[in-house]
Image 1: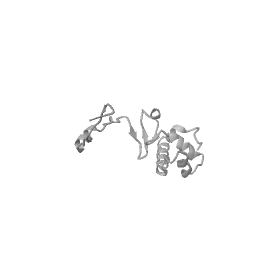
Image 2: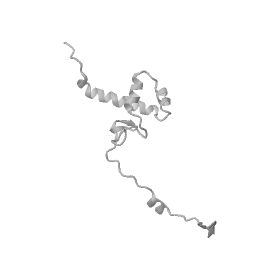
Image 3: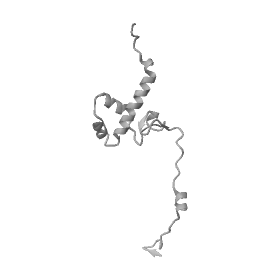
Image 4: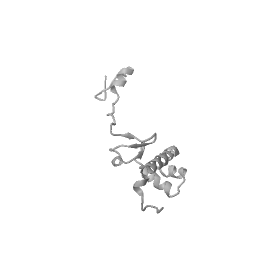
Length: 114
């Protein structure tokens, strides 16, 4: 059928589920992506591999800096447009606490005399 000199389709083609599945874009596996927790990931393609909040480019260090400044978690979440749930902030604090406990001897300024 021609309309205004252009061909138009007269019927809509329906595809089966298997045909739709085969047309879906298959993403390449993210073998270098590290899931550090439920909300925190490190991907070399995002922020040079620094830990970020999953699905964002917000670095965990930025969030921890805000926690260190005394900002409450609701304000931090609001500051980032609600893209950081409070659970993500809690996970960042928990993971940083674990990392500090494991690596504390590296940060000794001077030994305490006995």
